[in-house]
Image (cartoon, rainbow, N blue to C red; front, side, top):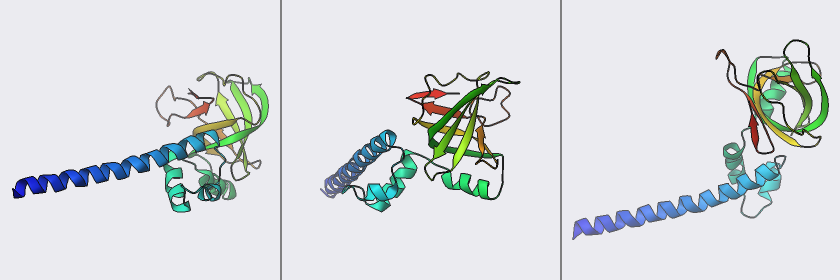
Length: 177
C-alpha cells in the first residue's frame, strides 16, 4: 500500500513539474517569436507586456537571442580587436564589394545601442547575401576588429583551414557561412 502511495505521489510531482515547464516553454516560445520578428525590442518594452515581467524577459532574452553588444562597446572604447562576438543589427548602408584580394561584400550595421560596425563578408569563401536591403535585420557571429568608425566584423564564414572559429550571417531565414 505504501509503495502505491509513493508511486502516486511521485507521478503527481512529475505531472506538476511537466506542467510547470510546459507553461514556461510556451512563454519562452512566444517571447522568442516576438524577438525574432522584432529583434530591436528592448527588455523594458517586454516588461510592459503582462506575461513578461522584466526578470522573465531578461532570462528569456539570453536564451532567445544572444547578443554581445556590451562586449562590442567595451572593445570599441578600449580599442581592442580579435574578439569573437554574436549580435544583430539593422542595415544602414550597403557598400560596393571590395574586390582587391579576397572578395568581400560590405555593409554597415547599426547595433541595438546605436554603434555602427562595418561587416566585411568574404564572398570567396561564403555565398553573398541575396537581395540585401537597407533597414533589414542581420544576425552575425564573427570577429570584431577595432576601427575609429565603430569597428569591423569579419570571419563571418567557415575557416577552410580550421584554425579559426567558424562565423556566420543570418538573413531572411538563411544562414550564410
